[in-house]
Length: 284
Image 1 (spheres, one colour):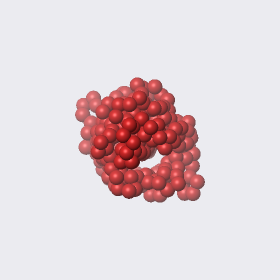
Image 2 (spheres, helix red, strand yellow):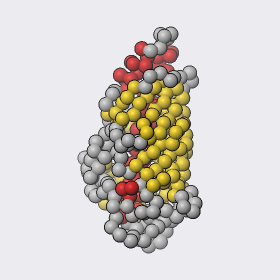
Image 3 (cartoon, rainbow, N blue to C red):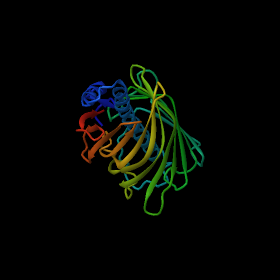
Image 4 (cartoon, helix red, strand yellow):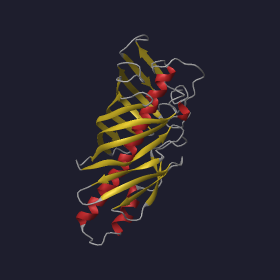
């Protein structure tokens, strides 16, 4: 993780101009719908990245503070995202636990991954994080990541079975406010499966997660789009961004496809409207 923002490169307005120029009917309605679909596609991409980031923070806190559910057998290897934060766990023994992850106020802090964070993440945990059936409920207190303010509730329910580590991730009342004040709402339920790194529970650097499911993203004017993961999203811990998979964002008459590629650890993705030629944009 080397960059400090969650979406860089092509401004979404440039993408909108490019796609609108391809439309032949020239109607304002079509142009407005495409504009909204493209913008909300980018918003959904940021929402997905911030959710994945919060998920990693919870995992690192669990390993560092002994509520993951495994007994350490060696040196813990992490991204050290919590290196400049203060983590409070109450009570130290037993469950349920209240965990407060504090990145400080004001300018916050910048850990090893280079992403500036500030504010607090609050977690209520019913049992060991990696125990099947445990529930972790996360809320945010004036929390910013990469300049974006994150609000709402994320609930992780451990759905692991023998040999498989998995979680259901439910996001409710999600809200992201971008630098400058523009905001959007997001919600949905997704299934997250750990596809690599299960056998090394205290080395988070080799962890890989696969996500499927649906979501809804809504702009400040109350206009919504549905988002369906059409090819499972892959997120390697060592990669700054989602590195594989695709999402379909559907509007009344048009749709967009965000394609994160085939697994390369880079900051590129593409977006296309109604199957048109994809345009590359840069992630954080």
